Image 1 (cartoon, one colour):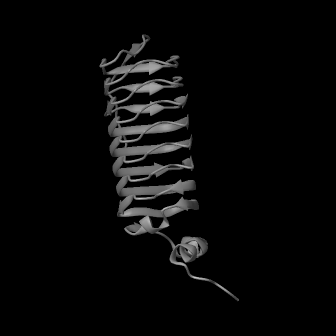
Image 2 (tube, rainbow, N blue to C red; image 1 turned 135 degrees about the vertical axis):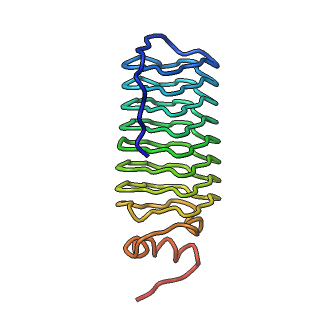
Length: 208
């Protein structure tokens, strides 16, 4: 799944709605509050850019990499990530509801309160990530793997999981939707950790 980018040209401008960015490296830019709704990034590297409050609804990241980007309140609702990588990102309160992910590698970084409601993730790998209170409500996760990750306070209410591999999650805390684990693979240790939550969901009273 390793992404190989072609030789890139440096780009020092801003973003525009429905902009077309092809074969460019956007490095160290302050894109806070930028309006890039519907923009298309093809064979691009977005590196060490500030995306606080950036509006990227419906943007498409195709064969592209986001590296060491940071942003609070970034709006990526309805965005598309395909054959893409996100490395060492630091996001807070990112809006990703209704987004579509296909063949994506997310490596490292920390995501606080990402809203992934009704998103679709297919053939996605999260590796070495920390996700704090991610909201996967109503989302579809197919062939999604979490490797050496932390999932803290995750909301899976109404989510549909198919061949989702959670065995590599070193810290798994489910706040809602434990019943949506049907279709996921977990380890025996994780099953023991989740036993109180499962018992409560099933109405089982455990007494010694």
